[in-house]
Amino acid sequence: KIILLEEPELGIHPHQLFKLMTFIKEKSKEMQIIITTHSPKCLDILSEKELDNILICSIKENGTKLNHLNKIQKKKALNYIKTTGFLSDYWFHSDLEE
Image 1 (cartoon, rainbow, N blue to C red):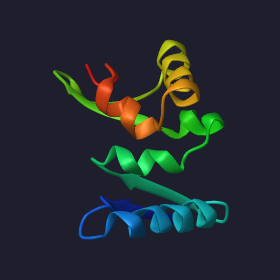
Image 2 (image 1 turned 120 degrees about the vertical axis):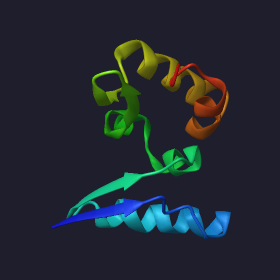
Image 3 (image 1 turned 90 degrees about the vertical axis):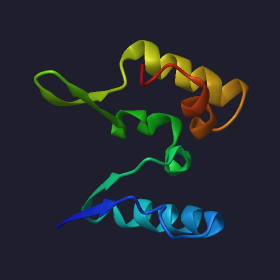
Image 4 (image 1 turned 135 degrees about the vertical axis):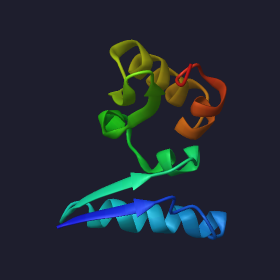
């Protein structure tokens, strides 16, 4: 089974979003779940070992590109998580999408 969820953060209370993401993560052990989101808060459910689950979407001249975080980006993200705060905060204040 594959489940596609577009922007699960829309129309939901922030506290409930974390509960929903926890539920989705648990269910992802049984089936593939693909989420598209504009909310960095959805990233906070990921552990440090799950950064490879992130794909950044960008539009280029020759079409849409999906990229995993590279080694440098992962290293910066891990450092931020360990020393400063949540992955969502790093996303807000980093150069990941430049």
